[in-house]
View (cartoon, one colour):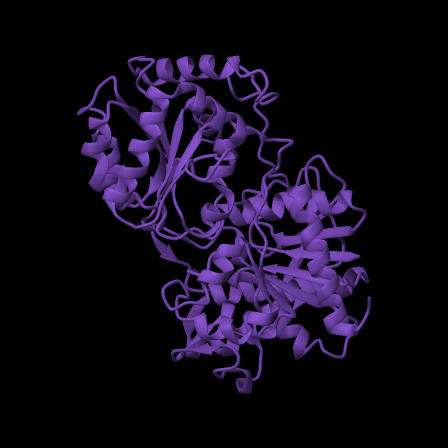
Length: 485
């Protein structure tokens, strides 16, 4: 099949979280299955064009506020032959952030992602390459299914099916009604069965109603978002399309995330040869100046400092966490109050607590490799990759039983294939209950903890599994769109 990914983020070019990881990894595995896979994204100002080819003809992109002229660059996804096309418009994309700066969204985001969405379709016309399926991601590209069902319905692209992946329903692309003309779409599409929600433009809602099929990034999250508690106001829309909604658990790039070969960690190890794990643990203690105690498990948290990630629970429970006699490391950035709070704790518990405020990918790998446990107490979690990375590196997750965390972690009480510790209620007491169980097993049942670690390291989270499931989804979408098998 010919499969086109259109995304605002693709690792390693630009990413803020799981979206970029998925779009930078899944296409490699689909290409390995023999599909013709290509990607389109913006060329943000920091993306170098040194190894790219510039197409000679400019790309004219229709919008409701006039045609926007863009350059088209062509590169490849690293370590593959998968083409990546970059839409360049410096006025729109050469900025300090992807979606905003200093805590504020860019005021012209509707225009920016109208240009990405319509520009991706114009790129297909320019190349003369028409995909069987266009895989769009989150609100930033949700206009593509709308354009295919309207202005492109009778062009060569009219036969292209669409799959919309919702990576996080909390972000929907909401804009004032006055901005709707920017899309270039007729006003009759601004209604409750289209792009209108609660008196405003909602791009994700339009994508949900117009896409051939919809999926999200774990089976549990696909069920949760159809409820008022987790539906962020779109649960009714998703229930309307429940027959076309599915959940596919994300994977990780196990070629890159491999403790046996990872060049970023001080000692390599594997499930069958785990000796290097203890050496990584010792190195991490030394790096942060922590007191090394074989009875004190090293607990880490690697996260965006955002309420979704449960940082309020950790802040509330911090005193009692440290009373368990653990060593604790925090890596993350985000909410100013959280950055200040978690940084300030270093002086309170010297030799027992450390923090790095910011984003440091090599450090995160050293932490995954050297820790005993990781906290993932999310309020909601569509999929989560942190728990998969940590398990791959033998670090046991202590997590809330929600979304993809519920789908990827088997609780220690659930039999011989257990991989972690789960709690249900979003409270500090719930988090402490799960962590106390983990600490108790670490101290008093080391053989059982070692078995848990081996299970975690050998659990299959590779994209090979998910790529096959996505292929089936694409085939179903193509059949629904055109009756082709």
